Length: 214
Picture 1 (cartoon, one colour):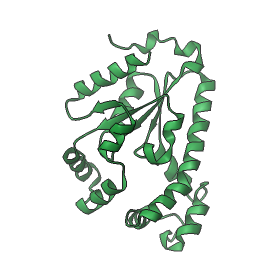
Picture 2 (tube, rainbow, N blue to C red):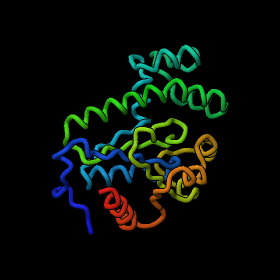
Picture 3 (tube, rainbow, N blue to C red):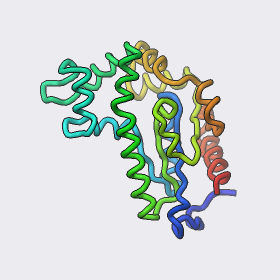
Protein backbone atom coordinates (compact mmCIF):
# COMPACT_ATOMS: atom_id res chain seq x y z
CA UNK A 1 0.00 0.00 0.00
CA UNK A 2 1.32 3.44 -0.94
CA UNK A 3 0.68 6.40 1.31
CA UNK A 4 -1.48 9.08 -0.29
CA UNK A 5 -1.33 12.47 1.46
CA UNK A 6 -4.55 13.50 -0.30
CA UNK A 7 -6.45 10.96 1.82
CA UNK A 8 -4.76 11.80 5.10
CA UNK A 9 -7.01 13.05 7.88
CA UNK A 10 -4.18 14.84 9.70
CA UNK A 11 -5.24 18.23 8.39
CA UNK A 12 -8.55 17.81 10.23
CA UNK A 13 -6.72 17.63 13.57
CA UNK A 14 -3.37 19.36 13.81
CA UNK A 15 -2.57 17.49 17.02
CA UNK A 16 -1.98 14.42 14.84
CA UNK A 17 1.09 15.94 13.23
CA UNK A 18 3.88 13.41 13.73
CA UNK A 19 7.40 14.52 14.59
CA UNK A 20 10.09 12.40 12.94
CA UNK A 21 13.77 12.74 13.69
CA UNK A 22 16.17 11.90 10.87
CA UNK A 23 19.69 11.18 12.04
CA UNK A 24 22.89 9.44 11.00
CA UNK A 25 26.53 10.24 10.38
CA UNK A 26 27.67 12.93 7.98
CA UNK A 27 27.27 11.83 4.36
CA UNK A 28 24.76 9.09 5.17
CA UNK A 29 21.91 10.60 3.16
CA UNK A 30 19.80 12.30 5.83
CA UNK A 31 19.00 15.23 3.54
CA UNK A 32 17.86 12.88 0.77
CA UNK A 33 15.48 11.08 3.13
CA UNK A 34 14.19 14.40 4.47
CA UNK A 35 13.68 15.71 0.92
CA UNK A 36 11.68 12.61 -0.05
CA UNK A 37 9.46 13.12 3.00
CA UNK A 38 9.00 16.76 2.08
CA UNK A 39 8.16 16.01 -1.55
CA UNK A 40 5.90 12.98 -1.10
CA UNK A 41 4.43 13.05 2.40
CA UNK A 42 3.47 16.66 3.15
CA UNK A 43 6.38 17.03 5.57
CA UNK A 44 7.96 20.19 6.87
CA UNK A 45 11.74 19.80 7.28
CA UNK A 46 13.97 21.65 9.71
CA UNK A 47 17.76 21.23 9.73
CA UNK A 48 19.51 21.82 13.04
CA UNK A 49 22.82 22.71 11.36
CA UNK A 50 21.11 25.52 9.46
CA UNK A 51 19.49 26.83 12.64
CA UNK A 52 22.81 26.73 14.49
CA UNK A 53 24.50 28.55 11.61
CA UNK A 54 21.93 31.36 11.67
CA UNK A 55 22.10 31.63 15.46
CA UNK A 56 25.87 32.14 15.22
CA UNK A 57 25.53 35.12 12.88
CA UNK A 58 26.48 38.45 14.54
CA UNK A 59 22.83 39.18 15.32
CA UNK A 60 22.11 35.59 16.38
CA UNK A 61 21.27 34.39 19.87
CA UNK A 62 24.30 32.11 20.35
CA UNK A 63 26.89 34.50 18.84
CA UNK A 64 27.81 36.36 22.08
CA UNK A 65 28.37 33.19 24.11
CA UNK A 66 30.44 31.48 21.43
CA UNK A 67 32.67 34.54 20.87
CA UNK A 68 33.04 35.12 24.61
CA UNK A 69 34.29 31.56 25.12
CA UNK A 70 36.45 31.05 22.02
CA UNK A 71 37.71 34.63 21.68
CA UNK A 72 38.39 36.94 18.76
CA UNK A 73 40.61 34.37 17.04
CA UNK A 74 37.48 32.78 15.55
CA UNK A 75 36.29 36.06 14.02
CA UNK A 76 36.73 37.27 10.47
CA UNK A 77 37.45 40.92 9.72
CA UNK A 78 33.74 41.60 9.22
CA UNK A 79 32.94 40.29 12.70
CA UNK A 80 31.38 37.05 11.52
CA UNK A 81 32.48 33.76 13.01
CA UNK A 82 34.98 31.92 10.82
CA UNK A 83 33.24 28.55 10.76
CA UNK A 84 36.24 26.80 9.22
CA UNK A 85 38.52 28.05 11.99
CA UNK A 86 35.96 27.18 14.67
CA UNK A 87 35.56 23.67 13.24
CA UNK A 88 39.33 23.16 13.29
CA UNK A 89 39.42 24.13 16.97
CA UNK A 90 36.52 21.99 18.19
CA UNK A 91 37.31 18.89 16.14
CA UNK A 92 40.84 18.91 17.57
CA UNK A 93 39.75 19.19 21.21
CA UNK A 94 36.97 17.04 22.69
CA UNK A 95 36.37 19.42 25.60
CA UNK A 96 35.91 22.35 23.24
CA UNK A 97 33.58 20.28 21.06
CA UNK A 98 31.48 19.57 24.15
CA UNK A 99 31.53 23.28 24.99
CA UNK A 100 30.32 24.43 21.57
CA UNK A 101 27.54 21.85 21.80
CA UNK A 102 26.64 23.14 25.28
CA UNK A 103 26.53 26.72 23.99
CA UNK A 104 24.43 26.01 20.92
CA UNK A 105 22.25 22.88 21.22
CA UNK A 106 19.82 24.14 23.89
CA UNK A 107 19.16 27.28 21.85
CA UNK A 108 18.63 25.26 18.69
CA UNK A 109 16.23 22.95 20.55
CA UNK A 110 14.23 25.98 21.73
CA UNK A 111 13.87 27.13 18.12
CA UNK A 112 12.86 23.63 17.01
CA UNK A 113 10.20 23.46 19.73
CA UNK A 114 8.93 26.90 18.77
CA UNK A 115 8.62 25.86 15.13
CA UNK A 116 6.82 22.63 16.12
CA UNK A 117 4.27 24.67 18.08
CA UNK A 118 3.86 27.03 15.14
CA UNK A 119 3.23 24.20 12.68
CA UNK A 120 0.76 22.52 15.02
CA UNK A 121 -1.26 25.74 15.17
CA UNK A 122 -1.21 26.06 11.39
CA UNK A 123 -2.54 22.50 11.07
CA UNK A 124 -1.41 22.05 7.47
CA UNK A 125 1.56 19.71 7.94
CA UNK A 126 1.33 15.92 8.28
CA UNK A 127 4.92 15.36 9.40
CA UNK A 128 7.45 17.61 11.06
CA UNK A 129 10.97 16.36 10.29
CA UNK A 130 14.03 17.23 12.39
CA UNK A 131 17.20 16.50 10.43
CA UNK A 132 20.37 16.32 12.52
CA UNK A 133 23.60 14.35 12.82
CA UNK A 134 23.70 15.03 16.55
CA UNK A 135 20.47 13.43 17.74
CA UNK A 136 22.19 11.46 20.51
CA UNK A 137 24.44 14.29 21.72
CA UNK A 138 21.84 17.06 21.58
CA UNK A 139 18.64 15.63 23.02
CA UNK A 140 16.61 16.65 19.97
CA UNK A 141 15.01 13.19 20.13
CA UNK A 142 13.05 14.34 23.19
CA UNK A 143 10.89 16.36 20.79
CA UNK A 144 10.30 13.43 18.40
CA UNK A 145 7.55 10.82 18.18
CA UNK A 146 10.12 8.54 16.61
CA UNK A 147 13.63 8.70 15.17
CA UNK A 148 14.92 7.11 11.97
CA UNK A 149 18.60 6.28 11.67
CA UNK A 150 19.89 6.62 8.11
CA UNK A 151 22.74 4.18 7.52
CA UNK A 152 25.28 4.17 4.70
CA UNK A 153 28.62 2.33 4.54
CA UNK A 154 31.55 4.47 5.63
CA UNK A 155 33.26 4.18 2.25
CA UNK A 156 30.12 5.52 0.53
CA UNK A 157 29.90 8.40 2.98
CA UNK A 158 33.55 9.26 2.47
CA UNK A 159 33.14 9.19 -1.31
CA UNK A 160 30.11 11.50 -1.18
CA UNK A 161 31.87 14.00 1.07
CA UNK A 162 34.86 14.16 -1.24
CA UNK A 163 32.68 14.47 -4.34
CA UNK A 164 29.97 16.82 -3.09
CA UNK A 165 31.80 18.93 -0.48
CA UNK A 166 35.43 18.60 -1.56
CA UNK A 167 36.40 17.42 1.94
CA UNK A 168 39.87 16.00 2.53
CA UNK A 169 40.44 12.63 4.19
CA UNK A 170 41.84 14.39 7.26
CA UNK A 171 38.73 16.53 7.64
CA UNK A 172 36.46 13.53 7.13
CA UNK A 173 38.43 11.53 9.70
CA UNK A 174 38.08 14.35 12.25
CA UNK A 175 34.32 14.63 11.69
CA UNK A 176 33.80 10.87 11.81
CA UNK A 177 35.72 10.73 15.09
CA UNK A 178 33.56 13.48 16.61
CA UNK A 179 30.19 11.90 15.74
CA UNK A 180 28.34 8.92 17.18
CA UNK A 181 29.26 5.52 15.76
CA UNK A 182 26.97 3.13 13.91
CA UNK A 183 26.55 0.87 16.94
CA UNK A 184 25.52 3.88 19.05
CA UNK A 185 22.80 4.85 16.59
CA UNK A 186 21.52 1.28 16.22
CA UNK A 187 21.52 0.76 19.98
CA UNK A 188 19.38 3.85 20.56
CA UNK A 189 17.12 3.92 17.49
CA UNK A 190 15.34 0.84 16.11
CA UNK A 191 13.94 2.40 12.93
CA UNK A 192 16.72 2.13 10.33
CA UNK A 193 16.79 3.35 6.72
CA UNK A 194 19.48 1.48 4.80
CA UNK A 195 20.84 3.93 2.23
CA UNK A 196 23.11 1.48 0.46
CA UNK A 197 21.04 0.63 -2.61
CA UNK A 198 18.86 2.29 -5.22
CA UNK A 199 16.65 5.33 -4.75
CA UNK A 200 13.63 3.11 -5.40
CA UNK A 201 14.65 0.87 -2.51
CA UNK A 202 15.07 3.92 -0.31
CA UNK A 203 11.59 5.14 -1.23
CA UNK A 204 10.10 1.73 -0.42
CA UNK A 205 11.70 1.75 3.03
CA UNK A 206 10.41 5.25 3.73
CA UNK A 207 6.89 4.31 2.65
CA UNK A 208 6.89 1.28 4.95
CA UNK A 209 8.00 3.42 7.89
CA UNK A 210 5.34 6.03 7.14
CA UNK A 211 2.63 3.38 6.91
CA UNK A 212 3.71 1.98 10.29
CA UNK A 213 2.84 5.24 12.04
CA UNK A 214 -0.51 5.94 10.35
